Every structure is written in C-alpha cells, then in structure tokens.
Image (cartoon, rainbow over all chains, first blue to last red):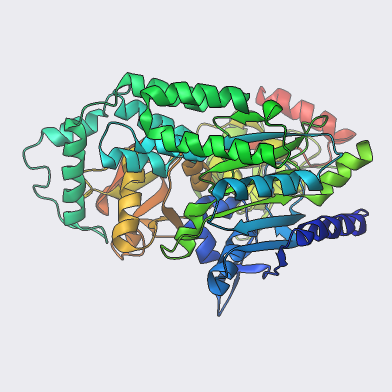
Length: 360
Length: 230
C-alpha cells in the first residue's frame, strides 16, 4: 500500500497528541486468546475477526480491537486514575465488501477514572475532537445509559427487564421482546399449549446436558411470565420516544426532562446527561449544535453502556466513521470478574483522517 | 475456448442432474471406466463436462475455474462469502431438496421457537458457565441467521458428520443440520424449531460471474440457455 508510510506518520502524530495529554503508551499482542473475545462478543465475532489456531494455545484471534487487551492490562496494573494511548493495526474480516480494508490502524485514548464520569466523558470527546481539528467532520452522540435506565425502571418483572437489557445491543430482538411483553404479539400457540398441560413434564426423559430440572425451572418462569401483566402501552410509547430522539443536545435535554416527568426512573441518567453537556461546554465544545441520536451505539462491536460518540466526514458519507468511542463500565466488570472500573475511550482511524486531508 | 460445466461426480445428485439435462435435450455422459472422473456433453458444441465433488463446485464457481455448476444452494451460501456477487442462480432444478433447520432435544418441552432457544441459551450459560453449543457444519449460514435474528449466548461447534449424535454424546446441546424428512432427527430424540428454517435448499444450476464469458463462450451460453428454456 502506497500510503502506509504516511498513515503510520499520521498515527504517530495523533498518538503524540494523546501522550501530551498525559496518556501512557501501551502495547498489546496482536494474537489474542479467542475464548475471551468469543465469550464477550459472542459467536458473531467469528464472522468479523480472523481466527487462527495452534496446537498448544488453541484458538487465537487477530485482535479485532484494542479495548479488551487494554482493559486487561489496566486490570493487572490497576493504577487509578490512568490514561492510556496505543496505536496499531486491528484486523476485521470483510466478507460483504472486499473494498473495505481488512487491516487498518487505530490510535486510541482511554481514560480509567471514576472521580467524575462526566468530566472524563468530555475529556475523551474533546481529546479526539482536537486531534481532528480542521477536518470536515461532524459529531454525533448518544447515551445508552438513558435507555438502560428506562428499561430498569419499567413497571414489569425483573425477568423481563433482564431479557430486554441483555438485548439492548440487538435492536431487532429487543423490539420483538418489547412487542411480546407489551401484549402486541401474542404468545406462540406452542407456549400456550404447553402451559395448559397439567403436567408438561410427563414422560420426559433427560437427553443431553440440560437437565429436566432446568426445563422445569423454565416452565415455572414461563408460567410467571404468562401471569404477569403486559407492560403498559404508555411506558412503551415513552421508550419509543427515547429511541427516536434525534435533535441537538440542548433540545434533547429539554425533551428528556419532559419524558422524565412520566418516567422518573431516567431522572438520574438525565442529570448525568446534563452534567456531561456542562462538562463538554466547559471544555469548549459547542453543545448547541451537537447532534444526539437516541438509537446511537446500539449496533457497534463494542458494548457501550453510557455516553457514545462518532465523528463522520461531512462530505464523504461512504467513508467509515473517522473516530468512535464511548463509555464501557459494564465491559470492565465482565473482564474484571465482577470488579468494575469506570472507563471511557475512543479511537481514530488515521487512514480516514488522511483521506479527509487529501480532500480539503 | 470451452464452457466448463461442473456437476457432482457421484450418487443420486449426479444421476438426477443427468436426467434433468437429458429432459432438455442434452446428454451428459461419464466417459472412460466407471471410476474415472471424465465426461462428455452431447447435443451442444463448446461445453466441456467436469465431474467434481458437490462440495467443491461452489469454490470452483467462485474462482471462475468452471463456468457453470450444479450443486446444492446451501453449499454455495455456506462456502462462498457474498455469494450473489460471485455466482448467479440460473435454474432451480427441483430435486435434492432439503431444509437446513435447528433442532433441540424433544425433552426440551419448553422450547419451540427461536425466542425460546435464545432465552434458554442465556439461562444455560448462567447454569453451566459456557455458551450453549450448537453442532453444525453450516457455520456461515447458521451464524448469519442467528445474528440476523438476534440470538445470543450460543456457540457453534464443528460437526462434519453424525451431527444428530452430538447431543447424546453431550458435545452439543442442539444441532443445525440438513434434513429432508426429519426421520434421523426423531430417531435421535430431537425436534425441529417451528420458526427457524435457516435455508431451504435444492440442486441449482449456477453461473460463475468470475469465469471468462467472452467470445465463443458467450454464444455457447446463449445457445445453452435457449435449450434449457432459461
């Protein structure tokens, strides 16, 4: 590739900016244990990452992102607050479009600091924005924390809330579940028939690893679900409203405050949103023109659970985002075996910044 | 320059393919001894018969090493990424039909739909500490299908044969496999999810988009399409 020298130089330029902000340089292995990534992202990642194999270590993956190894690095050293930067290649299988690169550079900036999440959010956003200054880009933001707070606050069973939270990142199944729990789609006939039996387990012989007791436990759960009232249509309407918000941040804030009157469970998340806007504003971001999308960040590879953002070319909608990032507190808890560390970060793709510069 | 037509080199699929072409005025023949994989086409000029394993035909089509090929539509979708951009379906041939389905133990009376499978996968992972295993050889088709439908907490384990036995052997909790009658599944105490038809497969005549279609080959293709009524 002719531009590789140029891309590397651009990566180093960006990394130097991040280091100047006090970030410590970290290096990670290119070959990562596949098991960790598969457990985290699920089988889907096999369709997006290169899997390889050796006789001793088993399945390994060419790193599809830096988040996981950087979080693991942080969990081992465990100094807080901590700021990290890295630059290197990530590898993504491209089976749908062979014009998309299957390896590309990422330069990242990650902040592990629980003191003031809103300040840390703003710090990452502005650090990335500064590195992109002068380029024709627009930013889009979102906040998955608001959606998750709304789900937790639904007036329904814990089992239903857990099912919805599990699928926040899979919009289609989330919608199916919501339709079912709201009574919009009836239970399938097979389930109604099952629950009508006085002894659904009569004559059942165990087969395979899942025991009859597990089947029985699920039937009990299904009975409980069948007797639970549907989620009120008003609450579903409010959820839909949250998801369809698409406005500048100050307008969204005022909408969110209206919604919070009928849905008090999101109040804390809305306060955090307001604090973040203040922090962004204090850091020099023009929040009056900053876009917010209620659905943003639900289909990315990373499992963000709070503030999310992306920077896009204003002239080339065909290009991938030049930078993306967000808060991933829950992911640190999964990787840390329950020990969560508040974390927020973002990455820039230098090859895209160069493409934008060439145009300017 | 000739148009290379790849067809399955043995079994029912080969016989049915011969019949299908015969009905349309083209005689395909194995030449040489019974065990030799060479063939001839009568009834049209410029077409060469290539006998291949049905499983290799998708790869040869995608690479453009054969111009036309007969194989299962499931195999093309499984083995060729973005298959529509690399091959084209010319004719569904109406035989070799089989469905790629997902099956679970009949003992799972609580499971009938994908929705159930997804819910059970979440609980299974909690109870057993690993993702629910689905044995299959159709990794791409099954993974794409489950991603599209938002199923999580499963893993695919490779099974190249006797897939129905994996549940009994406790190397998988469920299977995704091709079936035409469901008999083998029932014999192994498995049942098919009612709403999870991953792919309905049949023998299909494919055209390679990567092969050389210039000059004589283009005319040969037109003549062939005429004879086949395409």
